[in-house]
Amino acid sequence: MTPDVRDRADSPAGAGRRPADGCPIPEPSWDRALRLIGRSDEVALACHVTPDADALGSMLAVAFVLRSLGKRVVASFGDRHFAVPRLLRFLPGQEMLVPPEEYPPAPELMIVFDCSTFERVGLLGANAASAREVIVVDHHPSNSGFGTLDLIDAKAAATAMLAEQLLYRLGGRLDRDIAICLYAGLVTDTGSFRYSSTTPAVHQMAARLVATGLRTDEIARELWDRSPFGYLKVLANALERVTLEGGLVWTYVSRVDRAAYGLPYSELEGVIDIVRRTDEAEVAVVLKEDDYGDWQVSTRSKGTIDVAAVCTALGGGGHHNAAGFTSYDTVEETMAKFRRELRKVS
Ligand code: AMP
Ligand code: MN
Ligand code: MN
Image 1 (cartoon, rainbow, N blue to C red):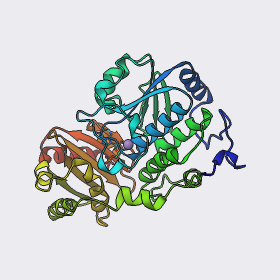
Image 2 (image 1 turned 180 degrees about the vertical axis):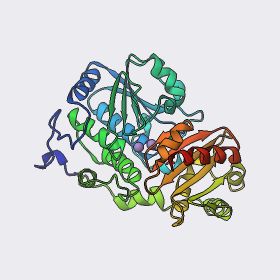
Image 3 (image 1 turned 120 degrees about the vertical axis):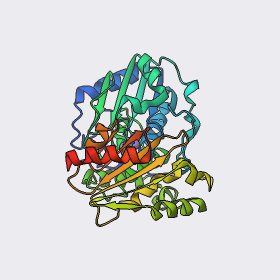
Image 4 (image 1 turned 60 degrees about the horizontal axis):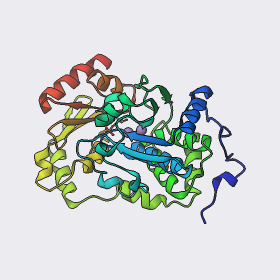
């Protein structure tokens, strides 16, 4: 049996009894969320397109909780080609996922996770537009709120922190499967507890999750320490043409590069973490061409430069030090636009 954290003196159980951890979301908003969930027999969950661990993990964790409360649950994300990235296939609860075409066209209640903008809901945006109620659960400072109810904490290190709050407020039980989903979100969005978003509350939450018996070593291996051989070759190509221009370091990975080794797009998540280590650069950029020929642009900043502002100006979003946007231009045009916007905030 796994330990039940609700039995611990420092982990109060039950709806409304969980300390807010400095969370700025007003109590009436949480109350309204509980009422909306309470009156719905079916709850439709969604997370952002090309989901990362925080998006998918937060959604699956809440899916488990709602199912344990006797709700019918559907969960999905609005990608044109619906597939869970190989990296995230270790997350439990994937049997609760349905492809977008099987999603209710007009849900009574929809909850969307980790979506900084309405566009990030992707194909399920049409379902959200027809839903009676939409609860937005998110932590992006650039999120101005697009739900009928917004549960947004721009200071939270991960959406998983808000998902955990929701769990306790719903009176749910933190079990090992749920903890794996939440931990995956927490550990990735904090860069393995390295980013400045890693507050005491982050470590306290991690302790609650680890206490359920999850294997942090196995999760770390799934997330960061494995890839197909072709990844090394594609990475070598990307690093071969990496460019340092003043305080900006950047490179790109095209579809053609990946096709030569049969490497799926989702395997490229870690490239930015290698490029951004460049001491001479304040800002790092990696352009990744997806299977449709669009460029998904990952950007990182080390200090005062706000890449979220740059990416928001280019139609994307994110956080001060980690942001992204989608570009339909060529690599050179995309970089020209990026440099222009970067100059405005540097
Ligand atoms: P990534 O570089 O994909 O790890 O993303 C870094 C941050 O930027 C995350 O918080 C994402 O939610 C955000 N982000 C990435 N791509 C986009 C996009 N196309 N539109 C809006 N936000 C994005
Ligand atoms: Mn995300
Ligand atoms: Mn997130």
